Length: 222
Image 1 (tube, rainbow, N blue to C red):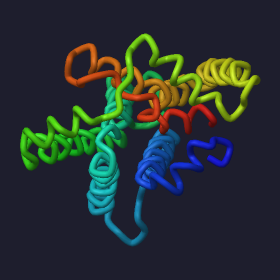
Image 2 (image 1 turned 180 degrees about the vertical axis):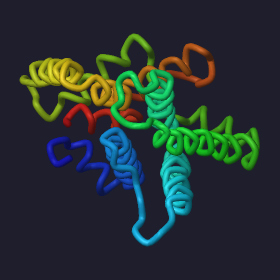
Image 3 (image 1 turned 90 degrees about the horizontal axis):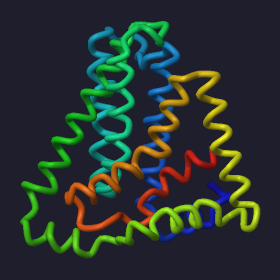
């Protein structure tokens, strides 16, 4: 985080961004634990009660994230796509019972329902229209260049080289572990394409500004 001046700026001037960055790291870490066969389990508690606590923990991540910054929904949907994809694959790629992924997937559904309730039911249409009209936007032709500049800015002239290394690293990760590679691809690139897709489907008033995807920047550095 200290490598990027944007993260340093957010830590002092936009602390909500750091909150959802922490939530995103928690979510990815917990998913990786599930993939490695280490589901969350509390000692001295029954398996069923531990599962209930885990479900509320997952739901809390999504609800708190979208309550802090609504565009956290892009990341939530990316995780949901990953989990749904793994569950559809079945046991062909996973060495453990993938039922442990059902809880986080169901929690994303609950998080999406709470998001809808909060932004489309509890607040007035006029307030929602004003909020969306004031949201930071950019044009689609400029989006990728602005995003790349924001990602590679800490590395100046060597930024393009670093970006190529990141792509090479993702490809190598795919070859070593396809599941983990798919997860990293979802959390790194998924929110970007979901945001663009929302604009093309006219669900968003414009292409979200590049800083909306600062969470992806975190996994880019990883």
